[in-house]
Length: 341
Image (tube, rainbow, N blue to C red; front, side):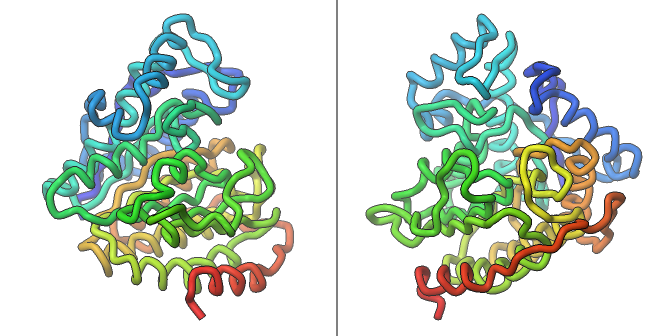
């Protein structure tokens, strides 16, 4: 497989070392990919800044200006969301990096790709930067894809432990985008109830799977088999985008879920298989959360193994020491809501 990765050193210049979302996250990923001799097997893809036209398909001009001005002084946009002097340029390049991967994929230059970008994006709404996120990278890339010929339906999968409220807000009325999210609930940002299934013409295009703490490998696998497969087969996407957050791991310091690295690898394998089955393998992952650095790095590594068509899984931390609760009743409820019975 011709698997690409997007990276630029400017992603390290959005940084506050005392903050959980700092440059060390990306540095650790690159170090592990080099150590495991995977980086040299990937096609490097140079990002470009997102254009204002591309950005304004998702975000208001007022938000774009707010982020630009905040970065000039390095101030916080909210208590969780910081900027530093080059954050605006980094954010433009992060959104543009995911767009660039989609462009290369749709042009046939690569088979799939992983955008190793930051700042992350899935909490950024059309009007607000929040939750460590400045611009919504995956939403901007989805809109860019839909602006091209021969792309009419985009499926976005989000396995970050936090609900991607910004992505949902961007597409809740859009019949051309299906958004699927697994997330700890109730938890930040408080959205993503199973009743949230889309608005107006977009009704039925959101699959929110709000999970109690400690759900792990078995529950996530059951969700993929019983919910995601039938819904994505019904939707028939032309492209799959993945908001890849690795903070649902049992050792992540900011959440209380039970996935292992092996469980995460299985999720990536399933999503790649969905792309192979439904849309000629067209899939792009983009980095979101994950704050235990080894989990983050090996999570990305295993996702890249899946994208390379390999079954290799590296899991130095092993399984969760905690039992996980069943999800049968939630899945039954969601089947009824989404007319899968």
